Image (tube, rainbow, N blue to C red; front, side):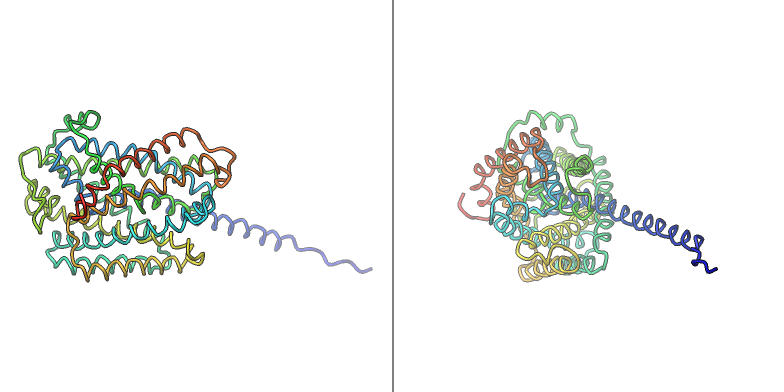
Length: 434
């Protein structure tokens, strides 16, 4: 009597056991990539917000206004909270880049937003590369143009790695932590009037709208608004179900940014309060470097160089990556992978070539670019507030949190008001009108 072949459970069991192990390994790798992208998003936003332009702005305005500049710092943090919580929540809930989401709500608006962001990002990046040159000049004594070239080449090299995202996350984390530690050292030694700075944060002697617009534009305007949210998309944790994780990450980024802003301001305020007059007008003006040197001499200038270079490199990375992600509005092939990395490299190369042709960006231009980004900031915010109020289904939900809409709308109105009040003074910085 013949029998059917018997099954072989041991082999089947072995195979079945291997599959879960493989799935677990993939899950663990995916989790590590996700964590890396989230940490990268936090520090990409923070370091993008503290570029050479912001450092120059802080030194310039602190020298002009003293402790009263604390109000502009505080106002920028409040506006930052209202803007970033909304942008991170909307972009990640929809699972779309900002330009694609904008065009889904208002056809063509994504193209307009992309053009503004890319133009502003290009202008910012020329200043960032120039800042890298100035930083390496102060740190190592090399020619600023060579320093700018080295900064640009290093940034290009980072995006030529196969796993560029992981490299970017590590680089911005190291640069961000290093900047905080070095600036804290200078702030402690400069012995600033902390009590007066706290008082002026809430009850300033004077309010300058052009200053507020410029500092907001330099720390949350233009590409900076979307840098963290776009990197967070790469974590894969999108959709309304991940909203709580998104909000925690956004707040962490805002906290890191706020600490960096205040510590830098206090470091320079200590110098100004001691009676040192910073050079703001000459062709070789370097108010931030002068302030650091006044505190620690030659070591202070080298610390300034390290901070300025770290701020420049991280901002080159942030500006190039974020601006390149907006190019997906023109071609879906640029949404990720090698096409996005090559677009990012191309953006850096164009910025570098323009810088090498123009030479070092003057301090005035670094301040102006922040103001310009502050002028275009309310345009994007208006589109996203419209989505939140009237098109929540684009965010894969029937209703969007009203408290976020209220603070976001308030921030949008403030940015429109400050922008209209300061158009003249901002363009007057480069000799146009005013």
